[in-house]
Length: 273
Image (cartoon, rainbow, N blue to C red; front, top):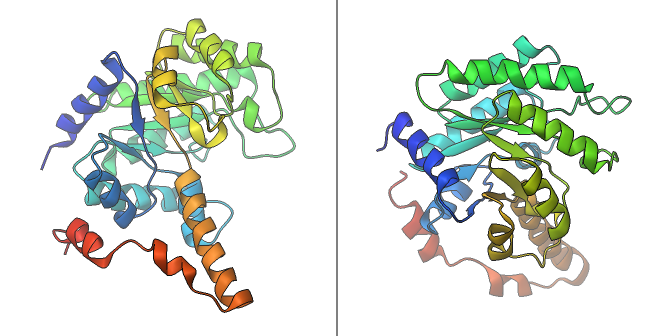
């Protein structure tokens, strides 16, 4: 079993190599072990996946931290945490969530500039930067090389101002963030524009981008990390709902043809008991 420091070193090295890597987003121990068995090199939590798992529209800080502990316990891979806005407006209060996530076993985490308030969805620029700076300061005091991702959430909240997004990412970089992330970038030209405007690794989430874009194209564009957010959770729920509707509406069971074999599941989960 790798130590947390060893996982942190592995995670940082993934961001430093020439090509991009895919970091998929499980939501429980089982999905984590499947992704591990398939050969992925790291995983990231998804707050949407956790909310879906609980049948809620949102999550609490405790939900997120407990999910971090579950996923860390299920794999020897590095784990990055989706901490939303760190569940606090004040920079110092938000930064405490970074330390709590590290205590839960992850080796990296993100902080967003989204407020969670639909009437004022994005933090003022100055406050957003102060929050990232406080998170960075906390991350630097962790005993291993914790990777801090700063997210500019404009495009998820109807504020499609790429100049402002880039300005924020550049300020987050200057504040010391290790990875930059602007969910909602949909096309390669826009992604290339953002990559060229910053020097730190850029994460692109494919759950919100043109699905015809490939990992090779993103790597060639300069992207370092590719995630899918809550997409795998939504896909699983879509398959579940489709099968349930077939049973209820048609009395059919054709979905059985697509089931994962029990033998495959037992092989993946055999060492987890």
